[in-house]
Length: 472
View 1 (cartoon, rainbow, N blue to C red):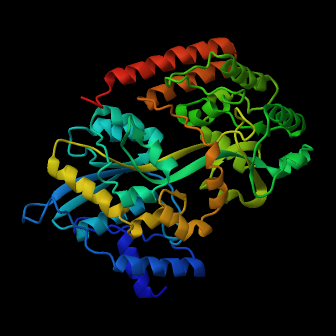
View 2: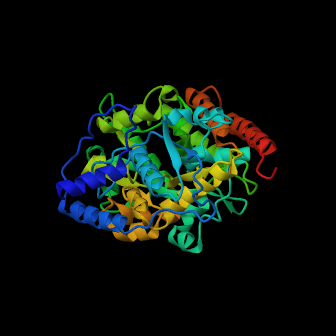
View 3: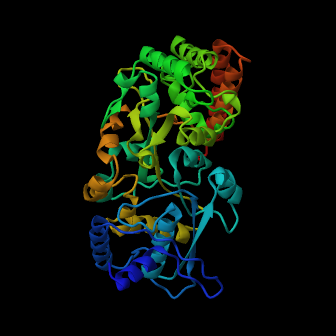
């Protein structure tokens, strides 16, 4: 890539500095492969051919710029054709800059980055202030709760037939509530389990190692594997992840509760762990504590603790997704969570955009135009090519370059919706890990834990529905 092309490309993805801003240190740039070079060159050619972003509803009137606030959590992100990208907010800032430069009337776009554990402060905590989000990018299980505030607007009109046809159905449907779309999916990550091949071989479990596939094991096989690992691993090493020190790992522990055939939720979307299958799964986990399957005092561990153990070779089985698997190379194999059938279970979460109505029709229209600008088959959709793109066209262009893309797309049929269309996901998460915490400590029996989770989680669900302003 020529120095001029790099300069143009850098200008597209980095925010323009105002006279009052200081110059940040340059972004470290790694070497670019020939494939990435060609992809980047094609990308720039497409970008150069783009028409200016326009808005038929808001012609230029000479008025003051419309101020738009876009919020995004700090999230690592790789792009197969651009090694300079390391965070998703860099992509969002690039979108904002390009939109601001090409929109049909003056617009001032502010991108605000917040930490992953600050969703509530960044969103509901800023309502009715000048920092209230007009556009929010985030993971659906974190942003789904805000639909019930009544401020998140349906996006069916933004998704033209062409845009809708380009988005994978399974990712689009994650953001559909009561028949209306409240999130435009941008990318997705699918969660499965990874196992350390060397630790398996040393435990005499070589027969369970599968190359080039996401395999599945029956519950009896899981029990045999975990017992063998417990008996063979050296002191300070452990068979499998477990954590209940915070709500961060609830998605993965919920999924483990499908191990004996439970669907977790009943037909009305309410917790139903007191059914025999749910109690059996809770007993399987509690028994595992005594059999040495998990790190000691897992009730006090968080997901990052187990991540560190796995990276250091002290944990045989840990959760990974299609983005994080690349750091382990050929040292690990992939397996679905134990589930109600022979194929096991996986989880996936789409990340995408929501629009908030802050009582200003003009800003609301500009926010809609921003999403139309991003999704109208322009170059910014391509920057999802690192995870699983929501766009079929982007997947066709870059799927061959995205690590393990075909493997995870083929496993999409085993993905289970862990949210249960919950109106208040965060409240349920806070309750769920507390119940598992006491189970791991032996403070409750599996039956008592199931009753606690059903009662408390369903109360939170009921309260979420009672507070819902979706139709008000």
